Length: 327
Image 1 (tube, one colour):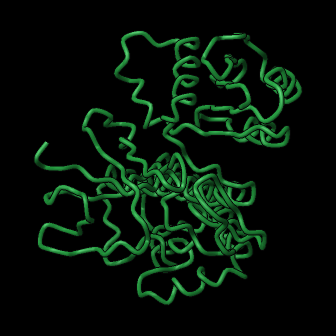
Image 2: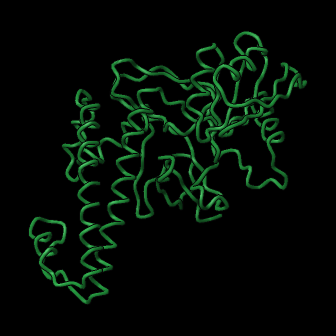
Image 3: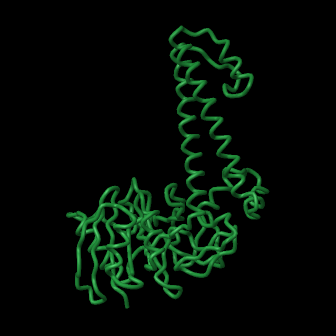
């Protein structure tokens, strides 16, 4: 059995705690974030160390460095740690808590997405960000028209006719300047969004599931690309994780990627929820793809769940979550 290593990862500096198989602390060191420095610090744990780090911003490079040097990497899901309930929280306590969870096999593991999926995610997330920013600009145009007491009438402002109508509206000089500037920015955002949409479509052009799911009424390229970035990759190389065998290209794993499992024979119940509401006691649970789903007036239910449960999907993790109304 190799040594255990826990990394409390930050933007510029990180804390590393190393222990033997009995849990005796061997070393605590703080390093400047650098691939070479990280590799040297973890190399002191010998061959095939068990390493855990939290899935915070910037974990990509650290996980890649650890995997390349032969470490068994475990990615801890932040929502499963429940550190918001602790009275004292600092880097040393966080790293030691991660180390103890790793030794006891209690880490709420998250899926380590391969590089191809990460790149696809980056494009999809960036496109979504640009769409949100463009929507804000459009709202500003509506606000200017409201100040001037002008109605767009029967025109849809962002159609070709609507834009011509917008250009012809009689507005005050300052208001016209702002509207023209906003329209220029909206056009620039629209151009970038179109380029990103084309690139995303190219990534998924050979993905069978990407084309099939769009046969469903109401599902277009944007919606169809979301599950592909969550649990599968357009790369021809199958991916695998600690939870089971590799999935065929273009087919997502039946296990939600944000839910961990200690081993193929052990289930995992991860208490998680939206980051903005951590105190609701939301529970995320793993279920096999073959589990029958029963529908009723109270919504879908799975075996083992409380009968009265409200199901929804977290916008940040993509996990299916449930909250019992009996709690």
